[in-house]
Each structure stands twice: as structure tokens, then as C-alpha cells.
Length: 402
Image 1 (cartoon, rainbow, N blue to C red):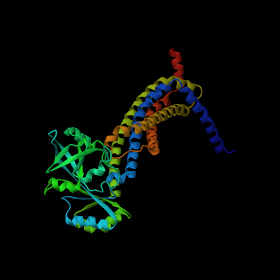
Image 2 (cartoon, rainbow, N blue to C red):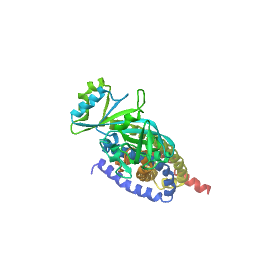
Image 3 (cartoon, rainbow, N blue to C red):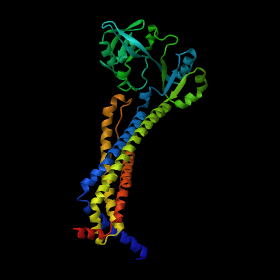
Image 4 (tube, rainbow, N blue to C red):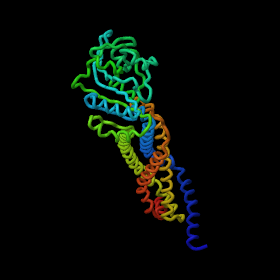
């Protein structure tokens, strides 16, 4: 066997006893060292939970994007639908698109029976609305009756505010409507939206009769398109000149997806920065704890040096212990982060616009553990370097002092 080969074999044989010695030597201090490393666990848990949940939300947005956005295409105008804007919608209809409009504006709703008045976010929608997803009501099946007469559906928060019940009448502007039910779930709207701006749905056919939208009134004038076939981006490009001339803004589902996911990514990046700061603060705790641990190990190191251990071997023993405890701390943090990830949809369900499907994110788990291990070792290394200065004579000096 050549000299280099013999050297490599010798190194391999020496590693196993060192690792075994490191494991046996750590028995008396594992709990204390793991306690020091637990400060890393909190930072890793935050990173894993944030990155994993952000990945879950982005995936759910892509899976439910059509119901979330309302269509393959979204059109909007600033001051109401003009004949020129309507002709643009007709051009999309001629290419096989189904178009429905939705107009939103704020108005006071008055309940004559209780003499109560509340501000409501009124949505006047076409018969095909929503093009994707399903609006559920209480009692069930009332959405199909919305366009059968002067009917309205109210958010539960609005019904409570008006002290109204199903069958009561409500006045909007110059028209009176019958309350036929309460809204349960609306695609694309988080549950908390009903509490912040209580919604009221009515048929677009009766909007003009309320006289609430006159010249100068503020409102959101949108239309949603569903394509039977073809590419939405290509269709918008082909009609770009007509859209610009009529001052109609068109957004495709791909553009809307990107806008939503970019916002989620930016928020997760910011929260991830908070997690990294927590991890760095945990690293300071690791450095302090390892320093105290090293001070208690000086006599043991001196004895090992007397028994023939080299400085490199001593460092390997204690770095291996720190690495093992750092890995365990990071693993505990990753497990805690995964547990938090599964709890977040229930805690944040009312503020999320989509139903989040929770799945494990291996990349987030792996990155969190690697970062936690790296910070644990980086902050533990400086206190461990003090072991290099321990000489075999220190054990003899302690014996003499005794």
C-alpha cells in the first residue's frame, strides 16, 4: 500500500474512536448543551413555519386562482361603462368569452322594521357571476334567487348591525329590496372582509333604480371574462389598441397570480428577516452557554492532553459535540415549525383569500436546519477555540493546588 493510501486509512480509523469518545464524553453535559442550543430552535421554527406557509399559500393561489380572481380576464374602467367600453367587451364575447359585470360602491342601507342604518359595500352583479367558484348562503340555495326579483343577500355582520332577519325589507337609495338570506362563503374574499366592510349583493338589473351611481359617484366598475379556449394574454394583445382607446384596463389571470404571489413573497421575506434576527439572537445565547460549558471542561481537556490527545483531536471531540447538539436543536426547531405550519390555516383562515392546502416544504425545512446548524457552529466556535490553549500541565497544576 502506498504512503498516501496508508495515511487516508489511518485518518478513517482514527475518526471512529474520536466520534465514540465525543459521544461518551457528552453524557454528563448533553442536557445543558441541548438547553443552550434550544435558543436556536426558536429561530429555526420561525423560519421553517414562515417559508413553508408562504409556499403553501402561493401553491394554493395558483390552484384556486380563477375562483380567487373571478375569471380568466378582469376588465375595469374608472367612470362607468361607456358605449366604447361595452364594444370592447362585445369583441371579447365574439371570440368566445363569457363576460359578466360587477359594480361595487359604498352606500347606507336602511332597515325600516328596526329603523337602523349601516354602511354597506354594495355589489351589483350580473347573472353569470361568479364565473368560477360558488357562493354559498344561509339558508342554502338563495344565490340562485338573487336575480329573480328585487332581492339582496347580506353579510352576517350587516344583518346583525341592522338587527334584520330573512324576509325583512331594506332600502337602498330609491328602491326597496327583500332580504332573502345571508352570505356564507364568497370566492376570493377572506372571511374577515365581511366584518371590515359588510357586503350586500344585489342584481345588476336593479342598480339604476337605486340612483346611487350618478355622475361623479365613486365606485369600482369591473367585468370578468371566462374563455372557452385560447390564451388570455394573446387575446389581450390582439385587442390592445381597442382597449387603450376605450380606456379599459385588462388583466389576465397570469398577471393577477404574479401580483398576488409577489406580495406574499415580499411579506414572507420580511417575516423571514425577523426569523433570521431571532436566530442570530439565539446564536448569542449559544455563544454564552458554550463559553460556560467550555470553562467546566478545561480539566477534562487537560487530562485528555495528558493521555496523548492532540489539540486537533480535542477540538474535533468538542466541535462534534457542539455540532450534534446544534443539529438536534435545529431538528427540534424544524419539527416545531412544521407543527406551527399546520396550525396557521386554522388561526389565519378568516384573513386569507384562499383555502390553504398544507403540505410539507422540504426546501424550507432543509434551509432552516442548515441555517440553524451553521449559526450554532459559528457562534460556538469562538468559545471552543479556547480549548486549544489548554496544556497538559494544567491538570498537574490543579493536582498540586489540591
